[in-house]
Image 1 (cartoon, rainbow, N blue to C red):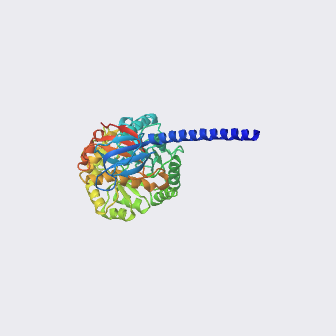
Image 2 (image 1 turned 135 degrees about the vertical axis):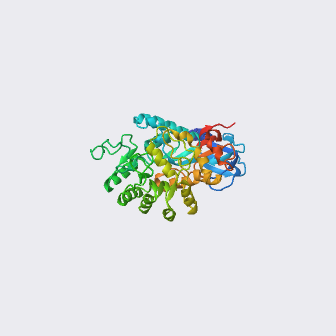
Image 3 (image 1 turned 45 degrees about the vertical axis):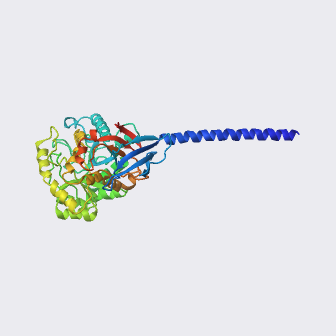
Length: 452
């Protein structure tokens, strides 16, 4: 009888334990479900531009844990815990991308040679403005430290996802050599080859170019930026100059490709562009003085010609304090914008959407949309600023390190905008981004919500 009682007590105790475990499991599951639901967002009643197709489709998008999990024409069944955003027939697009940004070069010109802490303060302002006005990702075209990208990724600062190139790599006397002629060359006095602001590095010869490229990659650069020809903002290198020898260019390309990424390069002229392309560079920045033969070479090699319509167009606002030398150079290269765009169209060359805004002019981001209206249709421009730019960024291969973005597609990052107006019909409506952009979502996180 004692054994029977002990058995009964044993089974009762076991039953109670199982019951408690079931209750705990249910509670845990409920809490977990609430967490998941709290991270789930439904955007309903939108007209969707998917980043690729020149049409708008009415539909609804579900976002969970930062990713797009459903794109549907039929309103999906949702849990009561899901956050619902009614687009009210607004246009839903992928987040905009700037393929030629200089977030850390946005101190006003009179402060541009001040201490790094000043430049950093202005960079933080530029980063926050950029993402709040619809640009959820940017490809840095040189001068922005990868550390800024890391801090933004950690959530310590507000800004776009930055794919940094690190310091410009420039030859002595090149477009990234910001010294006055009387200032000593750091290479010749055996000090750090980085210039004072830390945004450019001098490297002459194959060995130094290899070191500079590898140093940038160590610091977190996603792609490498070379100065391949004369520039507008550098007073001491004429536009016609060709910068870097074939061997030096190949050294940078080799070091970058060993990391699975590529080299982009500043260049205007036919000869500098041809040398860069023939030695492995995959993205030419500006390219305004190219000719037909070199444009065809770019097309045959699959090279990007990333140019800018606003800063090289007739409506550009010249930064206050710019030297007459730089103004004269700018007026000269501007003459090539229309012929370049004709060649881009003739050979169907990928060009993307870039702004190249310097010296605190980041508030002019919307001007690039309006300037491009003279050359491309609204849908072409929207595609350039979303999926085409994302394809260019993905040229960096494994260093990109995030889920795919730039399109509204299941499984892709939830970088999304809701826009007022009809920019698919009149792209110049995006000139005023503050008015047009009503909601900004970056990786599933709502950065801006100005919906009614």
